[in-house]
Amino acid sequence: MLGYLLRKLLHSLLLILGVTLVSFALMVYFGPDQTYKLLGKSASTEHIQEIRQQLGYDRPFIRRYGEYLGDLFTLQLGASNSNGEAVSDILKRTLPVTLALLVPGFILGNVLGVALGLLAAWHRNRWIDRIISSASIAGMSTSFLIIIIVLQVVLCTPYGLNLFPARGWQVTGLASYLNYVTVPSLSLVLITLGYNTRFFRAIFLEESGREHIRAARAFGASPAQLMGRHVLKNSLPPLLTRVLFSIPLVIVSGSLLLETYFGIPGMGKITFDAITNGDQPVLKAVVGLTAIMFVMVQALAGMSYRLIDPRVS
Image 1 (cartoon, rainbow, N blue to C red):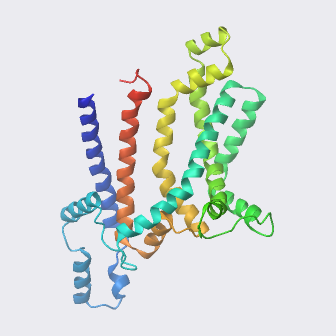
Image 2: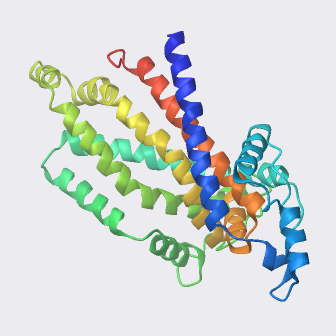
Image 3: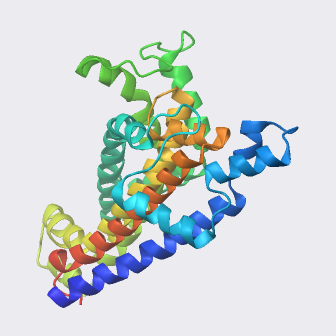
């Protein structure tokens, strides 16, 4: 077991090096250049060289990459080019907002996806299965932005129910938190539910067709025993993989769109501002930490397989 953990750790470190190297190279060669934004287009050659030296653009790529790795692992992420605030302080301020925004919708979307997938698998090729499958395809075919706009019009404006605020994040307690998080959470649930249900239905159908499931059904096992004790339990490895691997994607893409559209001051909003303003310290920190989180999630999923299913070697 110790050897397996060491191999996993080494594999994760190598993967982190590879992912951060690629992302850093893309930012260096294709990312925004602050030089002309700081100086303007009519700057002299001497001023351009001075600014590039201050920003570190004149240093060799390998040295810049090594400093970037050191900053990531020590969380010494520098200061924002836009306002001079320490990037670590920006992340400390915005990460709790992003988690508070995304966690309810992420959990609810996966729980509902599992429940609907089990229901569709049990009623395979019946009208319930057809309704769930059709609704899943419709959800997958609908744009995230359209879902947000429709929910906002229906729930947040005088043209609809006008129950929730359309924008902002002025959270002072549980009541105000629920008031601001409801519409973004519903948006996240609706856009992810179709993909989740479709995927979970597929793995549950595959598992429910195995011989031991058919034997248990023949001996009169109840639906709860079949789908809960056998099908769901034996489907945990791919289910866990799906859930864990969607965490970085939801945090980055989900928060980027939700926070930008609803004006919520989280990591997605500061990432969008960093992209539009060319704020490389913030952008490099978000991209690098997201890459590390993705690798850590992958390692966690791999190590958890043995605990969930002893048949996994």
